Image (cartoon, rainbow, N blue to C red; front, side, top):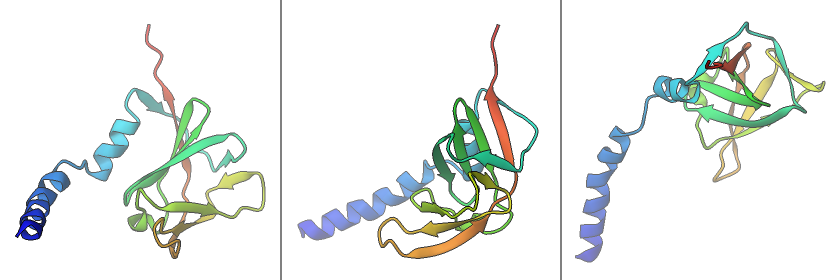
Length: 129
C-alpha cells in the first residue's frame, strides 16, 4: 500500500516538475542575460576555455574568461542533453566550426551520437554607466 502511494505521488508530481522547466530558448536567453552578441568567429582557444554548458537540444555555451561563446551546431543539436559528456578531438589548440563533438551518456558512459559545430558567437557583458 505504501509503495503504491509513493508511486502515485511520483506520477502526480512529475508533470508539475516538467511544467516548470524552461524551454531551450528561454534557458539560453537567461544564460546570456545582460550580454550583447559580437561578430561570430570560427575558432576559440581550448587552453583558455574555462567551462562548457549544454542547452538541451539547442546549443553549447563555452566560457572563455569573462566572455561566453554560443555554438549552435550545424547538425545534431537535437541530440544535445544537459547531462551529456562532451568529448572533443581536435588537431590544434583551437576548437573550430569544422570540428565534431561526441556525446557520451553520463550514466552508461556509452556514446550517444555527435554534433557538428557551427560558428561561435561571442557574448560580452554590457557595461553599465
